[in-house]
View (spheres, one colour):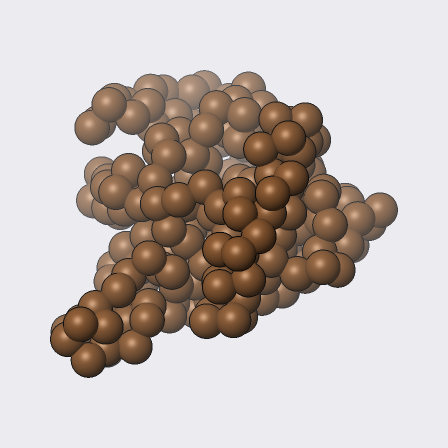
Length: 230
């Protein structure tokens, strides 16, 4: 079974409409909608915004639904000049940019007492996503790179530059690294997919509302094709 997580309704509502024979289970205030899309068993859920919601949601997918694959779909702010609104970023790895234990001698982003703080996406899922992008959203650019997550909406050029300098991220958002960490701890293959809704700078608060739905639509188109391949 494939578990698909989106933080907001705009990221999962269209996918839910595709489910055949849908059953709904409510856990931790989240609606887990299971059934089949294109004959493939899926469970789709809106986690809510932020890392805590995302981590709890992922663990429920593992414990309650025994998912074999986790995909996080959603929108993000670009951290690179050549990644534009509407483009898609597929995660190579993820980390938490707001994890800061430097006072204890750890580097920025390092999670104390864990063997790794960067969580690598599944290579097979990346390859499938690339192939499906070429076939279904060929009119936009697709990048593979690091996704950085934190409980902050980035809308300040200075903060954006700080993220780039310290973490070399391709895009920034608020859930992916938590989902990745939970998937890693449970040995479940995962991929974070992000469509760009803004440039994560001083224009973000203006661009985000305008391009949110457009960006989310690109993710839905891609996921519909990926489900058939996985």
